Image (cartoon, rainbow, N blue to C red; front, side, top):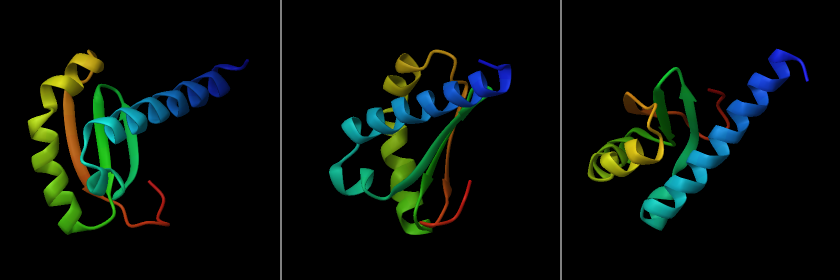
Length: 89
């Protein structure tokens, strides 16, 4: 596999891991409002479909931040942003 393809595959694997992890640890109605998750260079960025859900998600993430960091020891920063459905990160 080429280095670029390997990197893309690893990114997809991490996105899948975090999406499943968040689905399991967030309330069901909140998990359904996520539009994406990206882990890059020690930062975990979680996207919500609207600013209202982004605000709620920030509070929920604060409550499980220690668990997130335990599951991803390389995570140094966690942020929540808005990404409407159908938009690209």
